[in-house]
Length: 126
Picture 1: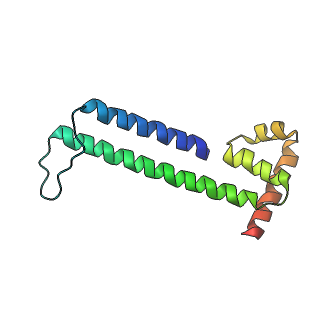
Picture 2 (picture 1 turned 45 degrees about the vertical axis):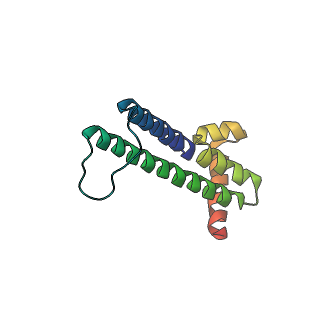
Picture 3 (picture 1 turned 60 degrees about the horizontal axis):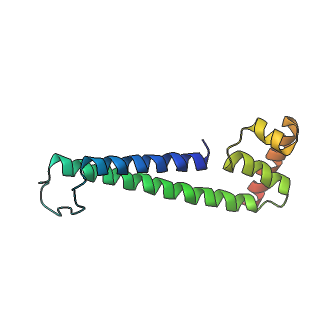
């Protein structure tokens, strides 16, 4: 699964979690008891747990966005546009190799050759 799809999936999950939390209790306030043993109701604990889960999902989304930015910056270091495009289409846009070949109007073999060369060049740059 490519990064954009993972981000979109996580965002959908975060929205679902938020909707569940809001549907559980429209009257629940964001006030949390600090210290001591838990005295809240099951409802409050459930909403708190959903809120915690939502925050974890949002942290995952942030990490994925940072990863995508790092991959983009790394690919941009390549000198040859062909190599950049092959890597961008496959790794960032999530196209299958057959789709990359069609989009670039190259044979599968030539696309794989460009891919291998791009990876070698990236290794030298890093």
